[in-house]
Length: 510
Image (cartoon, rainbow, N blue to C red; front, side):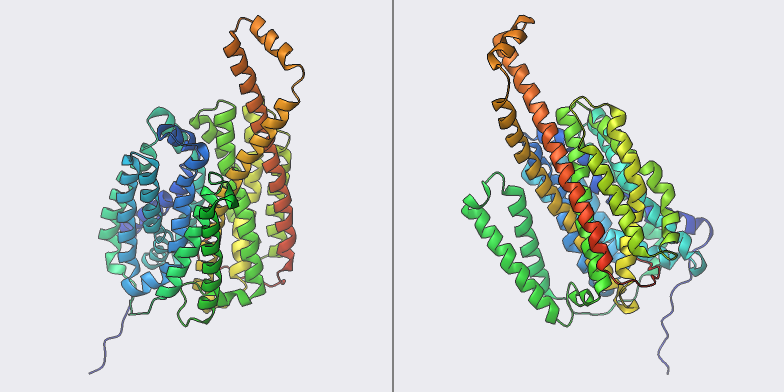
């Protein structure tokens, strides 16, 4: 007898196809949403849990790091258990830990839940994309990817708006509770529609040593960055130990992965210069971009008295141009030198950051929002073109490995940059405050004039101190933007080290 030949199930059609496409895209949307929905809610979270705003940003970095760690495992998980099972388990776990995030009574339990939420959420993006391509007919694969990509663009724009409105009108736990009905709908509906489209599986080995080394060095690095300010950096033996673990673990990880037959992260794709330059450009630029995206809502709420809702509105301007431009840019990367397309996007980021260095403590809403509008022009040029540059430089059989490493580096750079930027922001604020206090002209005379306006001595001192703090935060914010503009300029130069090659359009996540 002849062995049965494996055939893929026929694609869906009609209402079933439309519903499956909607649910898979919605699943991707809710996971991407959680990357940005907490950005404007940090002051609410830190105030409710009695921690500093810089500690509150750990809610962002913990999720990003956990998601970054899970990204390299996606290929092995799908090959071993099937994309449908991994998708369903990931989505269910994401919902469970979303619930636990909202129920967390303190920062420690919130961070633990957030880490597990990120670990389960990591596989949802690539699995939802893979399943979209399986349930849609081949002639409609472009439409499937377009629908999926649209949620990837819309979610980061919707995140700050929803996060602000929920935090102001309800309370911060609801930024996590809102995931529950969406997850329930997607799990129930998608299981009924796509369970017959499971991907083939095989007992493939997993690189447990590489995975362990990855978790160790990434976790040690992130904890060092998050705790460094509190522990006075390298004056602390704890921070020194973390730095040693991160350094040794990273070196061991590189050596092991380079020689391992089935590496958890295939570093061999770095031999392609175009890929290496693309990864480097995207990581540096995205980390800088994401760091400023975290700082701006903090600046608006802690310094200018914005509500979380209005901080979210100001951030959302970026999507007004980014969304309609995305399909046009996708068509451009095959017609023009992709290095020039990347450079244009990164230079637009540099120009916006440079413009923000002129911010003052009395700026109005439009002064804050208009740069976001112009940043939206560069966003699709940067994200789409750097992905095309990197993945267009590798062989077809290496695209899955290359995409995993690219996504890992981008996600990790966002988490690391958030820690670095928030720490630098606080240190610059302290330094500016000391300088301003030391140069205050005739402080006794200023105090007397404020008292003459009808305040008590304590009220007058508090008013002057608040004014000095406001100006110090503004100066520190401008400093962050100045450094960011320089980093963006550096990235725009780095991209030209990639060879000029004709790009192909890879059907993978960016």
